[in-house]
Length: 68
Image (tube, rainbow, N blue to C red; front, side, top):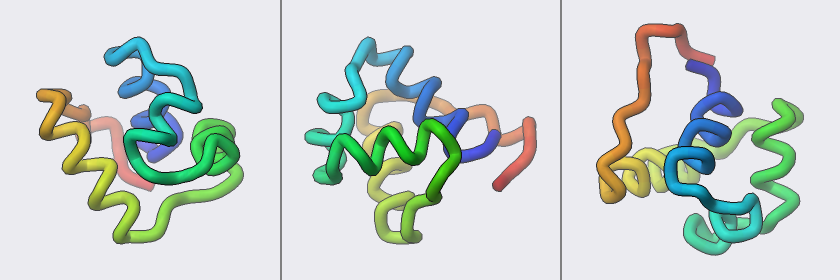
């Protein structure tokens, strides 16, 4: 699962706007928007925070679809 797919999946699962997810991850709305459109990828630190956020919200991401 590519990172942009993870972001889209998590937002849909939690019914969050890009802005709401950005606030929860302490990044800008523009950053989340760029992730979802595949324009940028997160730093390792931010990706770790995203993965921890998923764990805290009991979201399991399907890694079998491949990695970025």
